Every structure is written in structure tokens, then in C-alpha cells.
Image (cartoon, rainbow, N blue to C red; front, top):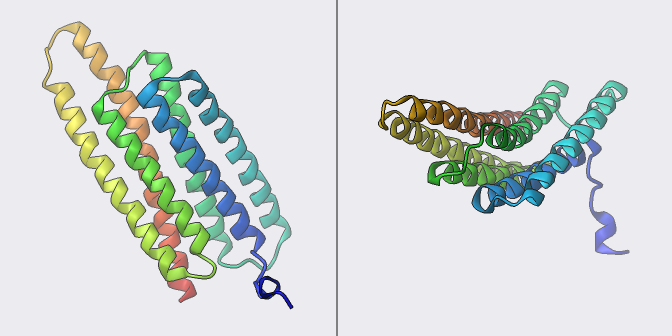
Length: 207
């Protein structure tokens, strides 16, 4: 008998959550490339990922309605899926706001986006480990939470610098538009932190 045949089949809810995390990572990577290079094709990838993530979540919710037995609490599955989806939504709206408000990426925005991308990496690793290695998944969730702290630190520094600029009307308009973009990526980090919190709660219940 093949050794592979003894491996337990991945639970479908774990699989769907992992697929959400994979699409999130792809979207976050494309966002990072977009803020660094401004290539339209990367913006299109983020939009495609956002739609794909929505579809995966719809399937997951449908499965929740049809299934009585789940690998962990139904509420935790619902919340984790929601927060993963929210991170990707904010990655997408960051690009929308940049284009709508004609805001170019600066060093602060690139820093924040990079940290969100790193958080998405950690969330995917957590989902890949959750079923068989929950304590390893917990470690990755904690690393994702640290990225949120780094984003908030960069956000505060960025806003402080914006307010330290000239007090003319032109700069005030630039300040307001740029802060709006900062806010979207900060919100993405907040939702990644919430996803990491749910993973921590799930691991606590599993162990």
C-alpha cells in the first residue's frame, strides 16, 4: 500500500479556507507589485482575485448551510472566511482609491502594503498547517498579527508627515486624498489581524 494512501483527506471547509488564503496571497502580491511599478495588469490581477475570493466564500457559506458536522465551530469558519475576504476587499479598494483620487505610492504606502502581503503569507501558512499542525498554525497567526502592528506604526508615521507639510489648500487636498488611501491599507491589516485572532481561537479549542 502506498504511504500516500494513508494520508487523511483534507476537510472541505479547511480546503475552502485555504483556497481563500491562496487567492488573498495572490492579490496581495499583485498589489505590492502595483504600488512599486504601477502596472495596470497587476491592478487587474487584484480585481480578478477579489472576485474569485468572493466566489469561494459563496461556496463556503452554501456548504455551511448544507452541513451539520464541521471541523471546528461554524461561527469560527464563517468569521475566518469573512475576515480573509475583507483583507482582499481592502487590497482591491486601495487600488480603486489610488486611481480615483490620483494618488501615487510613496515609501510609507509601499511599506504598509509589503507588511500586508507578508501577513497574507503568514495567514496562508497558518491555513496550510491548521488541520495537522495547529501549534505551527498558531505561530504563523501570531506573525500575521505582528505585521498589523508594523502597518499601524507606519500609518501613524505617514499621517504625521502628511500633517507636517505646508498649510496651503493644494497640500491639504493631497493630504486628504493620500490619507484615504492609507486608511484602506490600514483596514486591510486590521482585518488580517482579525483573521489571525480567529485562527488563535480555533487552535485553542482544538488543543
